[in-house]
Length: 319
Ligand SMILES: Nc1ncnc2c1ncn2[C@@H]1O[C@H](COP(=O)(O)OP(=O)(O)O)[C@@H](O)[C@H]1O
Ligand SMILES: [Mg+2]
Image 1 (cartoon, rainbow, N blue to C red):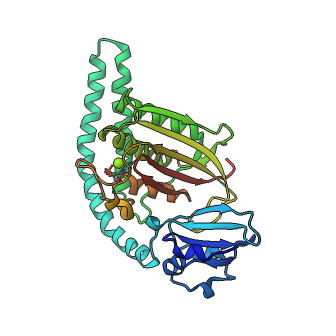
Image 2: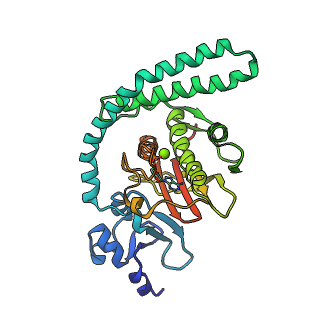
Image 3: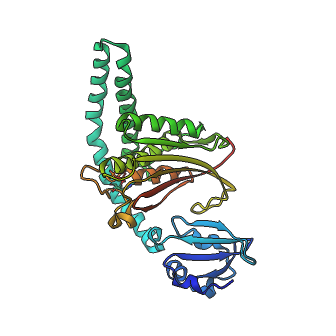
């Protein structure tokens, strides 16, 4: 196999054998991982991949290589950056805690007002709306509690058996109410996806944040195409997650045909308080990433104008 072409790529590429040992690394990979090709060849690739937030893995038929690993340029973070990010996080948590504190009281007022309103409603069918307010206020209160919690592991994980598609449907119902009929919602579900044991609130929060972003991007930018948001679920074999390699995983992909993530945000999209919207908080994706990582999962994305896809990856453990 002629590998010289790989050296021209911006994307870091590793070729691995059956047992996941490095056989080849291109120049971009040397640069990114801070090791020379010669140092890497023969080593277990997990050592290097533990340093990067995410990577794509494809099976190869091309002997002697079994796997091709790509680490897309915009997801690239040197180890130093990760360390820096860790220390930034302490400062960020402080800001979030203050914000959570500010949100708590008005939220309680909102909930109480919705309940009073519900008692005055002339028709039962209108209750659907006040119930959405109450349920969402409760969820937000929960979220605020998570943000305000002082511990270094901010997300309290309560696991239960969860039907992934039920969570997807819940999110689509909320987004349908919020964004109305102009937004086409497409389901591409793999019915063989099994129930998972995980933190349902965390997954719901992560998925809602990602889906809502997609819907916002679609509805805010005029486009030639009908705004369409697609939810796809799949079983993954050997998904590449940070640190460990479960045998199986679940993918929930959220695709939209909107304008795409602004170039200026691409490198830091998952940092808190990074937003491209005038009224944005920039908390949605950072929180989604945090929720998924607390479950041993990962959030990653690819984006170009007309096609943006966020992928929620979860390890599959027998429920
Ligand atoms: N599907 C998407 N299409 C285009 N841009 C997106 C998409 N999802 C996220 N973004 C960009 O990422 C930014 C950060 O998102 P997020 O962390 O949820 O914060 P917020 O929604 O409050 O701005 C958004 O402001 C937007 O610019
Ligand atoms: Mg958002």
